[in-house]
Image 1 (spheres, rainbow over the protein chains, first blue to last red):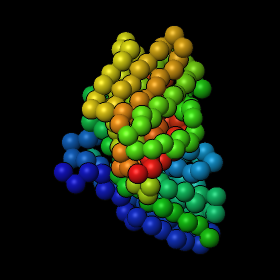
Image 2: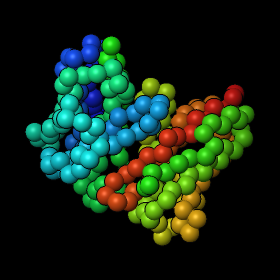
Image 3: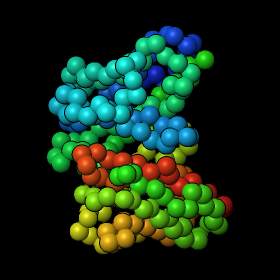
Image 4: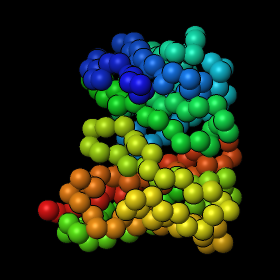
Length: 116
Length: 109
C-alpha cells in the first residue's frame, strides 16, 4: 500500500489566491482527518470525515476554509482567499472504521503551504 | 482541555542512553497514543495504551499510563541516532484525538 498520498508537497502562492490541497487515504480506510501544524499552535485538527460525511468541522478556522470528500478515495481542503497567516504544513490522515476516531492514525507526508 | 502536553520540550542525549518524555492531560480519556515525527515528514504511530492499561512495551519503547495523575511517560531505551525526531502524545477522548505540541529529541552519535 502506498500510504496516505497528499499533493502538492509544497505550495507557494500569493495572498488572495485560491489554494486546493488534495488527499488520497489508504484503501479501506473510510475515516479521514485534516490537520494544520505550525510552530505556534502545534498540530490542530481542522475537520474529519467518516464514510465521506463531515463529522466534526469545529476546527475549521473560518469560512475561507472548506473541505470535501466526494468519495472514499479522495478529499480536498480549499482555502479561498488565502492569507499569509494560513502558512503552515497541512496533513491528511486516515484510519480504519472501527472505533473512530480513537484508532491509530496514518499520516500523509504533508503539504507545506506558504502564502506571500 | 483534552490536549496532552509533553515535558520536557527538548532533550539532547548521547547514543545508547535512555530518553524519557512525559505527557500530562486534563480530562478523561479512552486511550493515549504516542507518535514520532521526523523532520519534514508526517507523524508515525508508535504505540497506543488504553485507559485500563498501566504499562505497555513495543521493542525499545515502554509506555506507562497513570490515569489518577492524568499522565503518561514514553521511555526509549538504548537510543540511536535514528531516534532523533519529535515525539507527540495524543489523547483520545471527547470524540477526537488531541495532540500535544511535541518533544524534540536529539540523539548524539
